Length: 37
Image (cartoon, rainbow, N blue to C red; front, side, top):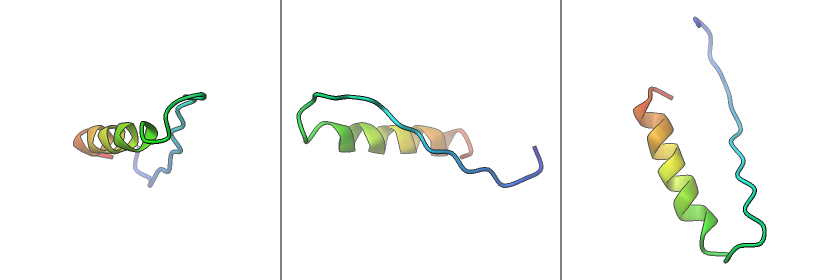
């Protein structure tokens, strides 16, 4: 696209155990980084 982009990725998981969102966020970030993000 020729420009810097910024994205906010949200996952609605309510209600869920408090220790569940962070590992999922880490996996999502690593996946996006592998796509060139």
